[in-house]
Image 1 (cartoon, helix red, strand yellow):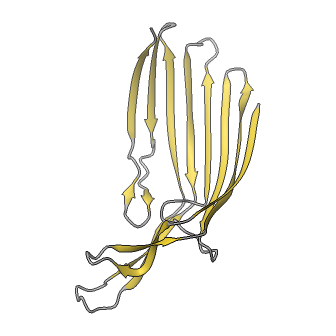
Image 2: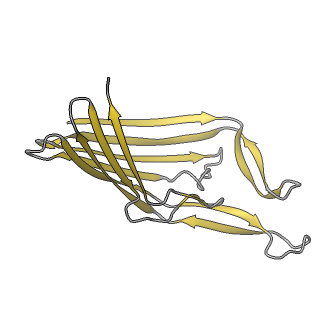
Image 3: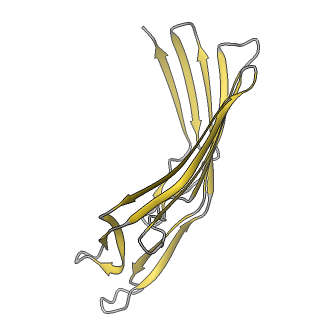
Amino acid sequence: LNASAAVFRSGKDNLAVADGNNLTPQGEQAYLAADDTKAHGFDAEISGQLAQGWQIQASYTKTVLEDSSGTRLSTAIQPEHQIKLFTTWTLPGLSRLTVGGGVLWQSKIYGTLAVNPTLDDQAPLIDQIYTQNSNAVINLNSNYACNDRLTLAVQLNNVFDETYRVHAINHYYGAPRNLYATLKYQF
């Protein structure tokens, strides 16, 4: 059994932060350089063998990025909470085959963007809030050692083909269901 925990706090000056409803001459979001920003949080992880051939790894991370007044920053890309849980099992009697899977969960991300609700250049901008609710992605994997040098690995990511954004405002989406197979030979 292995366990670790970490508490962190860091500061940064000149961090690019969205400038409210202000836009660039090209009509894109304007940014300011924020000083005295702080990132703080903690991480805890545990891993080990629960039974013969059964491995598990679990972690929890909390991260908050704030400006000098305590307002949260980067909420469109940085969830406050993340949980990861992975497990593998080497089958009894089939020591060359290992199967496993895991889940990645994160709390919601959100962001505010100034938009023009009409095509009129003189219309006032309004704040539009975009949110990606908390989500979980499940992945499965298997490894088969054909011999001492050759290994076949198969990984199925996003098993249930969840549609989720990794950036709340820009609508960047996470990878859809995908399958990887890798053949590895050690010389």
